[in-house]
Length: 86
Figure 1: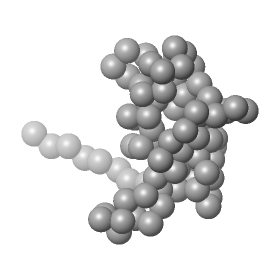
Figure 2: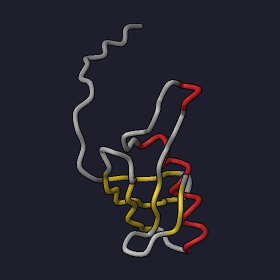
Figure 3: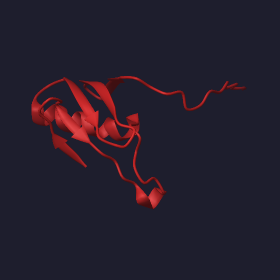
Figure 4: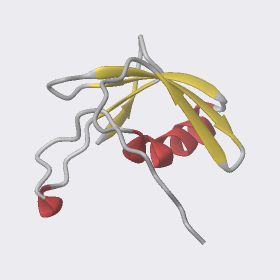
């Protein structure tokens, strides 16, 4: 769900019960489609978004053509080393 904001440019909440995700705790994947959506409607390239989930969060968003950029506070979810062989 998403709506135009007042204090923030837009708000969101993400629910994916089919994927067994009761509520999205503020991730970039949801916002990769919301940022272009709101950028076009608000006629803005830089926006501030508030996700109203239980953990909640604020994202600083930028729409740059086919790319989106996001910034905000984050929690480390995973760490890994990748080794690609030929």
